[in-house]
Length: 264
Image 1: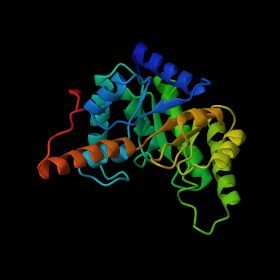
Image 2: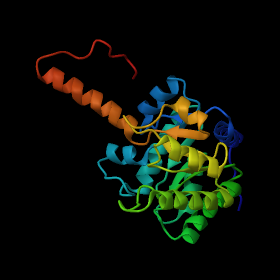
Image 3: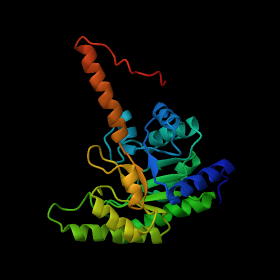
């Protein structure tokens, strides 16, 4: 049975898809709870993406689908309801049933998502992509799947780089053919490698993660044809670094930073 989805949800999905297809890069500072979502939205974000690692850490769970899906979805629901922006959810490898997980995510207001391939056999990974896209169609939503390949993250140290990049491209093309609008390749940070993969996948099809102290600026990524750059757990680490530094100064006899703003 086709689900009844509010018109505004379908509109948010279309907006998110358009943001990926635009020539301007979509920059997403990942969020993990309501207040982080509100702060990022107030900074001028056009859309939001959650970070599964950061949400799991918030509740004391390690990354890797260790946080119960019900708890994960409840936090995402709270984020969706707190902002007037399209929200994409990182649902890791799909919690054993990518299509059902996508369906449940859509029910709480999500219009896009990340799905890891975990370097499963390509046929299985493609079937997972197809299941997520089917869930979107059944809900009447143009679901914006950011299909992730772990080809670079899981490559052996001695693996020829050309072969690793070739596998990322092979998997990325298969995910695009299966209906995913964009492909996420974490671990891709070198300029020429980004150019190679972006050229192979096509304009506005590649997404990457910004790694502190390593990644290229968003403006340069845009010039290379990247559709989207996100931050994963690193935005939470920025916040935690500031907290720990402030606490250390305070405990050493100092005061809190004068630049502190009332953001909550």
